[in-house]
Length: 396
Image (cartoon, rainbow, N blue to C red; front, side, top):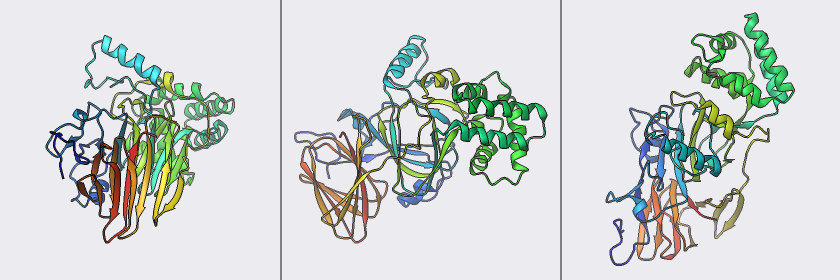
């Protein structure tokens, strides 16, 4: 298979070398188990397949994929062993303004307190490859109020209990923005070392509560002590995905992934605005500007499913122009030919198979990424002796 830069005739398939991010919340085993590699000594959080300049995916010869194409989407394999930060992503207007402002201020792109890495928005979709736990979107404030009152009943400090009751009353009045602002105010009592947040979760740990929201928040607080992001978690939907289920997270949606293995596709951006549960830069004021405070149902996205020539074809079409995603589940020895006239990224997540386009054929195994320029016009997917699953991202 041709893997270098095109010389006279461009190749129809390019094998990709995906950089791996070693964020602290990553897993030492999930990506290794997927790819068949030994367990890592350090966390492996994400594998990137795309053209974002901060983390370039390369061809087999070391050439950056971005030298061939500028993709509007980015595909990742994500492996979380600990909660990611409480975060949201900006829309295009906020991203353009924030990126320009930080550039004008002379803040280097790699500075730890830089918030905007580019001028793009970052809607994203995650498909669970294992059981996957996430928080996404605000739940009904009245339900959160009940949880805060439970907390108040567990705490034996009258000042802390009174403040929790006050927050519950505000939630009953629908004051989500005010409550979030109080919880993550950098000058407020919830950020103090060994302060209110520590006292609250010591009380939870000493209780016999089985409330799933409180147990989830306690797990986060155990990792990030004195971080009120664990209290923010009580405002959010707690979602348990089974393999194959998916979330779509629009710009402005507060969220945090907790644990599991998933495949993500998103607009090409690395803009993350954090509000807690992290050792990275927290930008409370900017988070407040970009977050949507409208409660809604959990942002589950339902795909369309059909069977074509014994192949299960699952199509995820979020309401964005940058990307859509199709999952192909092929039984042993099955094959399917599809149209591929525009650039795509294919990622195998189980089994052994092949992709063929034009004169090029590529073997794929779990973790393999292939860039399909679309020159061949068609793409054949084939399974060997075992079932194979291949995700293919492209523009809708």
